[in-house]
Image (tube, rainbow over all chains, first blue to last red):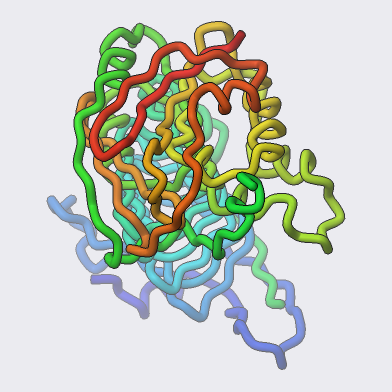
Length: 175
Length: 210
């Protein structure tokens, strides 16, 4: 479980509301190493961090744990060796690099899954998929290319991770 | 007469397949022979004009493949009918069918030729010829019966020798079937490599560049 009080102490931000009445405010997010309540040892199934439906993020998002996104993200998502789940309300306009990627919402961009990419029946993806294993459920919407040659995928994910850094400063803007 | 019959088709949404139509499972001879003879030492590039289907992706996942899913058959059927479009027919088709520097090894057209007017087949085939190398094969089906489903079927690959197809509606039409001879007249850049009659009046074909 995530310790929200601890996270609030580490993050300074102004959330962008997805609504018509708010003016744009430019703020900076310093995302430190994520804090969970169980920090002493790695557990077999690490809890997933979550970006809720009211959050709009623009920039490069990196992390070393799994992530569920129900908000909207623009930019790049880089989760080394971890899973990304795009929830049903999630709207992603970004290139994604992760171990496994599951899309239940909408994603436009390139998906690089070292192990697997899964588009559920509610999911919609526009873009190219690079993964040795791709599962697309009947009813899913997809338009793009699927590259299932493993060597290409590992190289692309590793090269993206090595050029990035773990702590990123990102800019949050509201509409 | 043939063109007017094709243009009378209702709007077709390939993304949604209802359960109203019948389903058909069948063995493929040509696809099986072609696929098992492939050189899998390098990635196979496939262009699928149909929509994405789970078992098809599952099948190709077992091989080093690069698949482009265009989901364009519904759009192709409506190409040239939109008088308000700023693009001419060739430009519309160019927009629908993506081509990059590397040609494809296999192009899956499924049964779309049975539902396109002759002029659209001709323009489409020029576009497809740009995506081919000398060993590329175009794979699809022609219907030999005069009673056909009013909209394209939804095909799935289950194995190299087994496929299934699902009709989106049970409604049928009477039409003069498109035969391979006529198809070659509309597609001068290609020639018929092989064809075989399979179940229910379906003709499986492989085309290759001239």
